[in-house]
Image (cartoon, rainbow, N blue to C red):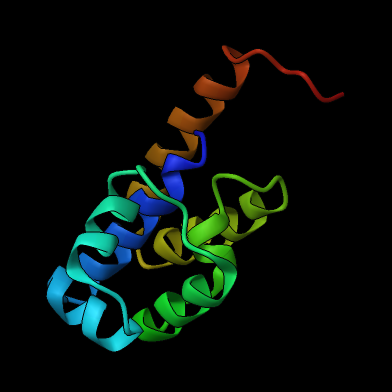
Length: 111
């Protein structure tokens, strides 16, 4: 994913917190239109604004940037692990089987 994933992740966590764009804009001290343009991937927030937005959402920067920085996949892995821990053994086993098939059929770049 490209830089537009930043806006998509902001939107995801905003909706997860059950906030409207208006609520997030007010908490972050920006306009509603600006939040909308960030979420649509039309604009990237300045660092200070980005910090205001993630503080308003109560999330960490790595959660928002997980798709655009390589180490972000460590965050995604840990979030996935948390979700898997909540499943019963049978469901978890099925998901691991699917992941194994996907890995076997993927282009493995790293040794």
